[in-house]
Length: 155
Image 1 (cartoon, one colour):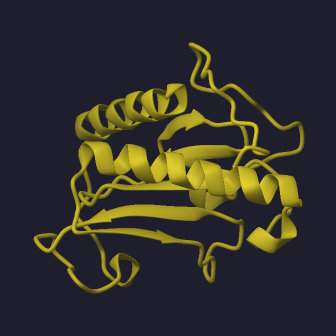
Image 2 (cartoon, one colour):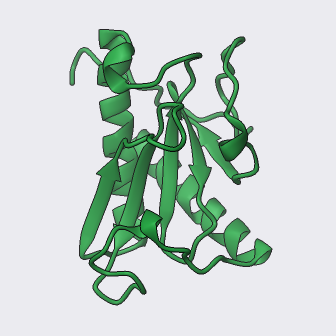
Image 3 (cartoon, helix red, strand yellow):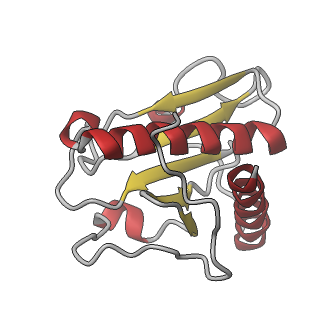
């Protein structure tokens, strides 16, 4: 990973990089924004199960192999940072990391903390309707994840 240049600082604002042509699909636009990393926008899924999305801020990218090699390495580094951040605040039995996109074609990576006590264990979470958090619960979780990401990036 020496050749992957990570952005070590998140600015005070939640967004540090805005790609001029980047746009989220409608399916993602209502999800709470956590922060932007060097490559990826990080969004919160508002379910009771701890779940975030990393969406590379590149236009018209459907799959990881459509990214440049530099962006592929950066995405893997950001998945690692996000995975470590999520595990640090949500102890889990399994950390599910997946890029599926059958229903939402914009490249996005799911990072989901699963426990044997969650309502749908061991099944996949997207085949069920998961309980939703309240607005206050979403904001508390969003802030906790943002803080954990900042800490992991600074290390």
